[in-house]
Length: 177
Ligand SMILES: [Ca+2]
Ligand SMILES: [Ca+2]
Image (cartoon, rainbow, N blue to C red; front, top):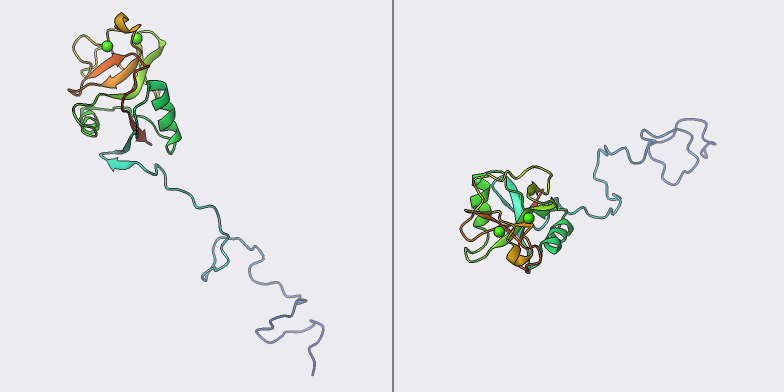
């Protein structure tokens, strides 16, 4: 007997029969709960891991800039590296950790400035950097007029902070997230 016109039940498998009226168990092709290996998974663009290229340390992850840059360029560079930012220091532990990322001979940019309002220091996340913070070096910030004023924050050789003319090209540290 030949197959009928889809009017009755059929053998369990009928490959090639394209007018089977019986709906299959999963009408939604991409329900996400495939119960078998799915060789036909769409070749999506692979998602890079968050903070790709950064080295985890402590409670965050860091990346030392590959070349010296002035502060605005360093800021942009970090933002272009997996959406990071110039490093923002939360506490003494992080300060020590970050200081150790570069040789003590190197001073480097961090993510704070008083570019918006002179003598009002802000981290890039918008939080205040109290002028009396324990980390400021001696008489800093002093907005040294010898250099036309100083509006960008750096880590000094000793691990203390200094305000410096933003146009200096020097190392920088990015943080992510
Ligand atoms: Ca200043
Ligand atoms: Ca200074």
